[in-house]
Length: 390
Image 1: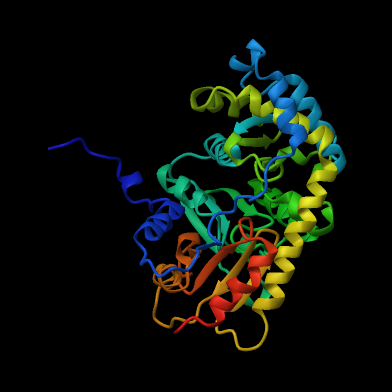
Image 2: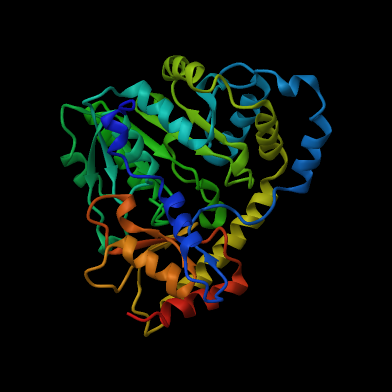
């Protein structure tokens, strides 16, 4: 008899993107070139200025050394300048901890706030890594339902009704992964008021904050003098600067919160790699224009896809979209999202994710991501959806 495994982890779904890539490896060879609408990874390279900068410092012996757990002071200072421009925030470097991607920032936030048996309210559909992590930690998930009629935007009143004496946090991703929906600043403000009334945290994952059309301010929470009492912010610069492999995340919270989170940081990762920190510092200091250009490109991809997809005669229904994503209702009655996504791989050469990996009761949906599809390929992708045999 072999070793046993934690029942908490054996009950967790396998990583969905890895599952879909297995389907790709097994698909029939019918000659159709694959169209990747699966993983939200920018298909463009990092700025040449950034990579040249990193090449120039790579031989510095310090690049191979640990940094402070929370990150280099000069990098966190530069990030305070970025947050001042982006959010009108007056942050201290002590409000920031640099992490191994947004996923590790989420783990830091959750283990700092919660213990087994606590509850977190999530807006469905939700980014699949979040419920996976909560399940591993024995934290109960409470889902606010997806309402197709309002494009999947959260309803503060609905979320408030789900809060119990075991609730420790409200968790929201905006722009949403998987729907692309961008929660308006006034709704985010109302959610913070809900969190205050019940003395819980509002955890806001803003991985795609630089892909809001026009570069508008996502919210005003950082401008409140007491923001850190109930607000925890998660960010990723991997998508912003096309550095996903560098794992460039960030946790922003009160100084007291960061103090306790660093206990977990030291046992999980010690620190974000120095080379990643220098990449982020260069990005926030020099690449605002480069980011804006890519934001506009992604908006064009989204707008073109949406306009093509919504022309009459398409049996797939666009339920919500924005930023990097589209959330689509598939026409395969009685089929799960996995079955529908597998049919698209096998018959149409399209890779996407099934809806049920983003929350219960979502088998009728699929997630499409625009990071890997160029504008010139979008009409062909939509044609394959339209011509799919049902």
